[in-house]
Length: 239
Image (cartoon, rainbow, N blue to C red; front, side, top):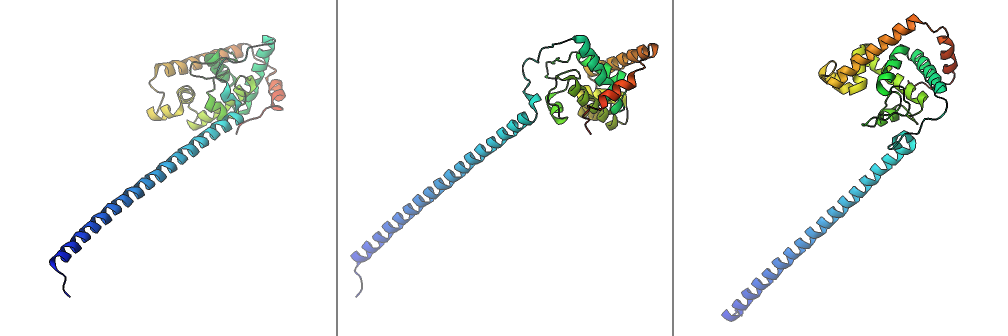
């Protein structure tokens, strides 16, 4: 039996209503799914951020535990004891480590003179510490536990000077420039960087070294070997 016009009209009206409801429901489902996806992405991003922060914190804690020298952010320890005895100790370390690393003792003395004026507790405005003014990261890389300890500081400084001399094929000026301004800048300019402070530093160290050499030649120290032998038993060289 054929449907009358009224039934046909009602059928099409119901179909359009169902189609509208289905489309609305589908859009609602899509919005819900999109919102859920965004929430998952946001939660994963937060989780990743938390994990990354925990990782960075763990790295810093590990550095501070392994290298306590990084914790010297305030005032250095005060000098104590007999200064003449400390001067003798510094001289012994200079001669011993200069001999071990194949350096001129006058060069180490000159660097210390220019860097800290032989003050074991010197701290620069940039955070360099000790006799040879080691930066915290450099001290950590060279296994320095206490940058204000003369022996540790001179050991690490002598090792760094030796490395830079080898790096620049024995060129004293380039090595000193790298010690002062960083080897990256020396490589950048293929020579002593055009920085007034670095140029003055290099010339001053060389001039002071020459003065020490001339003074040593005028009054030679015959017991140098004995001092080096005494120190070699307690040295902890850095390869």
